[in-house]
View 1 (cartoon, rainbow, N blue to C red):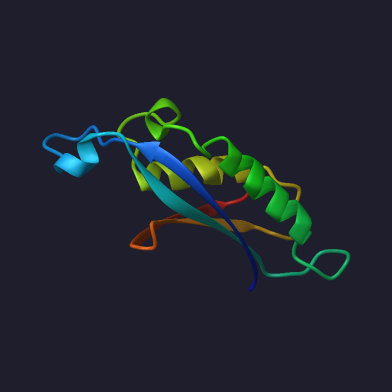
View 2: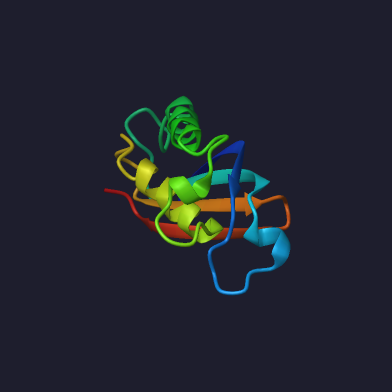
Length: 123
């Protein structure tokens, strides 16, 4: 299986909406997020690569721009968790023009402390 990974770092704000959140998580605060998109597929495309790296970088940057310097509570349904952010970025990337890529994993790191991933097939 071939894999290509691109990343994009951005800052966004949120506050947790779960019952009894820690005090520092209950108020609006910022995190530095790094989103990594890993495209994979069993074969290379017509030009000998899985997908165009510049296209992958641009598509991820555009998806991250929807959340950059924004409040995630205003952009994500439900509690604005990093898991929901990973899923939202996956959905934004799932229609990329990459015929050789068959799967995508989006991993989001929050402040270099923890990371979550969402994976699935490309459309």
